[in-house]
Length: 285
Image (tube, rainbow, N blue to C red):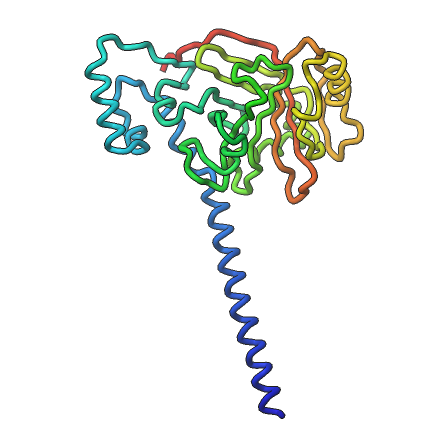
């Protein structure tokens, strides 16, 4: 009887050790993915800054040999070179060689938000777990859904990004929870091939997890007015900061949405109103 009991305990301990090792392995794999998630975007700023006249090594490293050869052949046979689509330091011509789903670029000073914005013609959730090269990546991309037009002409354009623990993607939107940071950093910049949009941030707050674009008809100005009344003064939010900026149903706003820690039923929103729409410029660099 003692031997049977001893064997039982040995078996229990053996199974426990195996399960512990498996759990530790899974945790290490998860932490490794979290650490590396979003790091592929370190190359894309270099791509965007490349001139299409140069044989950019960053771009070539992201294209297959056949793609590079095809691009070179096309360049040689082209009788007329089209002008590059460049806005500031963002060369959309080069970016489109990697992925034509890239249609804009977003920057927020004093944060890590400096990324392309993508929109797929397929499943709206594609860029939730795919990077700008259309490769599977835990961090996904910064993206919009097809319910929003790609020219930011909608009353409300909703932009999604993950809240990555390593600081990438939309993680640093959490900085706007700090009243001092919120006060000192009022602008969001969106670069399009032909225009630069400047938004003034008027609100940052915790919201629920409803799909905003399907929950409100923003083309109905009465609905939009009611929505703005709350967005500019989210009194029942667990956390919020606001700026005294007039926002009306005739304005266009941008909403940046990310997860909020481990709260599955909440999202953190940073919202800005369009205050400037200027023609694209080319950097003097």
